[in-house]
Length: 299
Figure 1: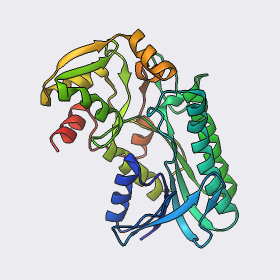
Figure 2 (figure 1 turned 30 degrees about the vertical axis):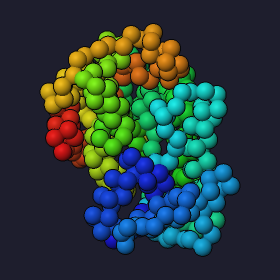
Figure 3 (figure 1 turned 60 degrees about the vertical axis):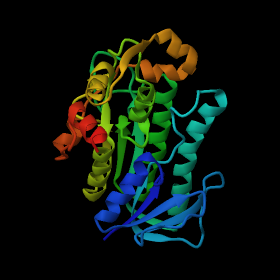
């Protein structure tokens, strides 16, 4: 049994990751801004205040694995100036708070896995790998700052794995939940022409990958995407095999008016490689969009 400290452990990805770690017999400590009661003996909630860089002073944890998924949702709200600041600050403040706790001896980590996103990459016809540079977009610069803050933990002589997470597919949240909403009214609403390539990953595969990186004490940057990126049309092809709906394409200009700058990420085509993590021995349970959608919609 190992001790895991999770930042963002109550979110869309973190909640499943917590269950997965507990199923492996580990003890999970979830950092939370509110007092919560655990429903499992192997899960405890720990209060923290990222604005003041504090983790409950009565709490300490030695020989632990840190997993950082914390950060305000990128697609939850329109990107106003205030929202952009919140997106950046929520990521950097979380890492700074954990760093301070380690620096003061409150935590003694053996390894860290920290989230980033494939928004790090730009748009293009090529297949992006972990060696490609960032671009000048807001999300890319945010990811770069996020990763730089995580890499600072090398001060403590521990291996750090950074996961550049793709579009996470699951029923409880993320893109698929949004795709399914209009289908309640018989409409499959597809942004633009649907030819843009989405580099996605099943939520369960993402959680398995994070466990894999921690258990193997791996170091470096890894793309957390499935081996077979799909166009948006291909994703809806699979959805419409199981859900009835009429395809309606929303023009790109309408998406831009509705979402503003955030529309860049909806309309962007980005093919991201999974070769590096596969070469390390990780295998996917849901490698294709067919297996992914079937598992999610057929339960």
